[in-house]
Image 1: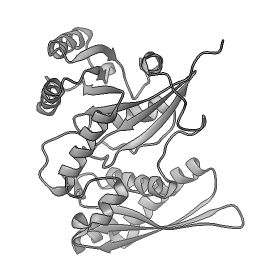
Image 2 (image 1 turned 120 degrees about the vertical axis):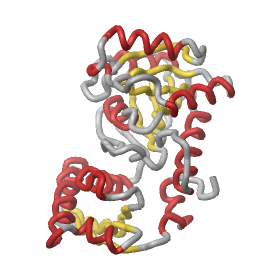
Image 3 (image 1 turned 135 degrees about the vertical axis):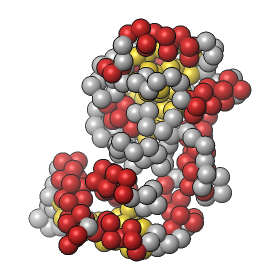
Image 4 (image 1 turned 180 degrees about the vertical axis):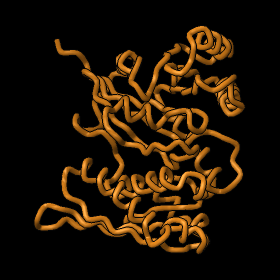
Length: 300
């Protein structure tokens, strides 16, 4: 008899910058979520799909959970908790390299306890922490009674990740796969392309650029020679922000475009012609259509 197929959703939750997007990319084996040293990089729920043996694990990478202050913050946090509610399994990722347990992490554990939702504890960045500190942190967090299991990993190096993959695949309910075996994400290429450019903005501009920036792929045109022409608009809220993105003599926008183009060529396996335009739109944070594009609830 052939082994029955398994399929289920696994939600990745945690405080901002715990390493959820890096872990998702490592688990799936390719890039499906953007990564940045800045917190709150992920805005929408991203599906990453891993086919492991007879099991299909559908990861839901959620925005970091924090105390929301703006409409966008509220929508992001609501999306994170919605992802946790819908998951067959929930993984709480904790940055073990931080001193002590972060306030956001304690708040997540309290809410899990209140809703009687059990989770699997993932201690990340173990390559930067001494063993005795890891064991003490694991004991402290497990005292909550929320966690069924604990895994210690490094999402960046891959240490411990295969054991996590195998364990998750074994825990999923029996059922048919929801996606083809070779599919790794449900994100449309136009949206992924915009996210990659946004990642390059975050990395290049560091603290100079606030979070009030959005990227939209306006045009995607396949060419007869096998290449693709992509036109994107970078939206900012003020003229001063536009000047920062453009840089002196247009050097910053050129560098951002080159970095994004090279990564897009690697992902699409075709030549990419990328055009970037910067526009000032003061109220884009209050545009319901923008939230719909990200899969966020404008009224959260």
